Image 1 (tube, rainbow, N blue to C red):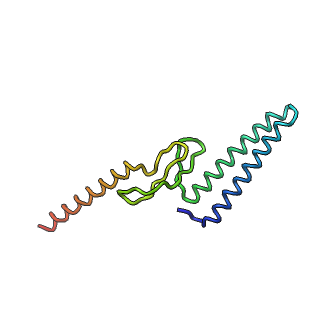
Image 2 (image 1 turned 90 degrees about the horizontal axis):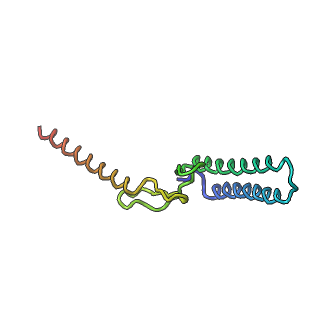
Image 3 (image 1 turned 135 degrees about the horizontal axis):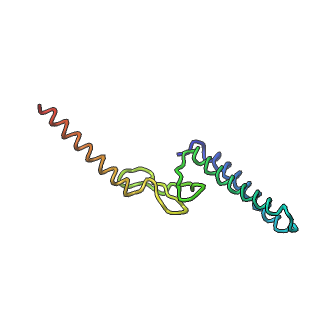
Length: 131
């Protein structure tokens, strides 16, 4: 479920991509600099920037209501991967590890429990009404 319209989301993704490109260019330029004491600091700063970009992307996705997979840190964003045939609910999958949320088997079991509860409630109501 997107909180913002697709055009805004595309703009956010493009901005993050531009920042990633800038960090990548800085990393490329660093290779051509003469060795110095600052080299380790520069590498550390670029790694920190990469991690910050990843975390920002995850925070934006979380704020927009996307599901997150905890297979890695920072978490991976789960994307829509169809509908559960039994329940009609959306299924989301992680592109990194392939896990799904909600898991199709869990969804099937949830529906079975829900149906069993409904039947039990009807039976209890019928017994009460028969009194």
